[in-house]
Image 1 (cartoon, rainbow, N blue to C red):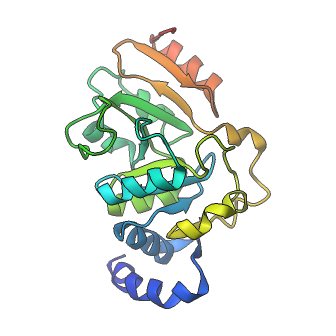
Image 2 (cartoon, rainbow, N blue to C red; image 1 turned 120 degrees about the vertical axis):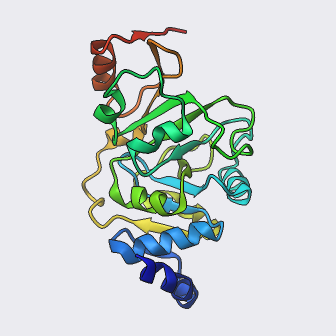
Length: 235
């Protein structure tokens, strides 16, 4: 991978005149995506649900760009996408989570809200003591996060517009992005139910859960959380 990362800056420069579209395929593409993110570019990725826009959590410039492109309320928090379930405890407090719960549901179409740790960039969601964490069931984005660290992740659309399953649906944002990555296996296989996005579940309170957004896989998740003894916290 080091060889691909070393070559990526020059390759990006050479390809710049030919557009900013790439395919999610192999170490070369992973290196290009990681390098663009390290350059504070905002990159569009497919995930296991809808298309997402990503920046680097540790970069204040990336965070600012992401909010501007989305035309997003600065008080509305972003989620993070990380490379592996085993790293969740570095970014969110999991001491109270039942053993095996996280490894059972992740990677998968779920965003887990936890109390944030001090390891997160203080400028990331500064007015919130919790953080939404994703580990998508999509190897490409996880490999990129393994290289650059947590990704600030949000849906690939302007705020209050419909979510997108395909890159063509947010074509108006392309000129503002560092790159758009395409999954050659995605076309024709996605179903409209994925447009609901990830199910967001708050697990920050011991012994309780709260479904913040009913998205993909919500019913299965609720059944599992009930089976391990967690109680639903209603509004």
